[in-house]
Length: 129
Length: 164
Image: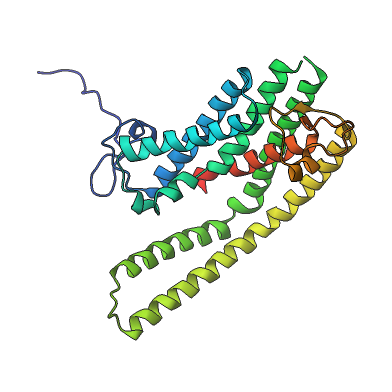
C-alpha cells in the first residue's frame, strides 16, 4: 500500500480557455512569444526605453560625451535598439499597434528626460568637481 | 562631495518624493474610490465593445447600425468626461503642493549653479537653464532645468501605471 500523501502542486493560474498565464517578463526574451494584450507589449517597450535611458545616461556622463553628438547618439540608439527588437527579433506586426511611428513614440519623451537627468548628474559629479 | 553635486541630488530627490506624494494623494482621493473603479471598468468595457463593433461593420451597414455606434461613442465620451472630473480633485491638491515646492526651491537655490550641462542649450531654453545666474557660461545650470526634467521623468513614470 502506498503511504504518504502526494505532494500537491500549487494551482497554476489559468485563463478562461484553459491556457496557462505566462509572466510578461518571461515573454520578453522569447522571439516566439505571443502578445495577446497590446497594452502589455507597449508597457514592455516603455520600460525598455527607460532602462536604455539610464544606461546611456551613465555611460555618456562617465566618458564624457558632450554636445549635440550625445543627444543625437541617444536618440539613434534608443529608437534603433527598440526597432530592431520589435521588428527583427520579435517580428511583430507593427500595424496592430498603429504603425512603427507609434511604437517608436511610446515612452520616448519620458526616456529622453530621464536620460538628460542621469547624464547631467554623472557629468557634474565626475567631471566638474 | 561638492556642493554643486549635492544640490543636484537634493533637487532630484525632492522631485521624486514630491511625485510619490502626488501619486499617493491621487490614490487616496481618486484611484481607491468605488466611483473611479466603476467608471474605469465601464470605459474599458465600452471601448472594447465599440472597437469590436467597428471592426464588424461593413460599408453597406444600415443607418440604424451607424446610429447605434454613434450613440455608443457618445456614451463613451460622457464616461470619459466623468472620469476626468473625478481626477480633478487630486489635480488641485497636487497643484498646491507643487506651488509650495517651487517657492521653497526658489528661496534655497535661486542664483546658484546646481549642475554643469554637458551641452550648450538652445537659446530659448537658456532662459530657463541659466535663469538668475551670473556670468555668460551657458553650461551653468540653474535649479529650474534640473527640477523640470526630474518632474517630467517622475510624472510620466506612472508609479501606479500598471494598476490604473
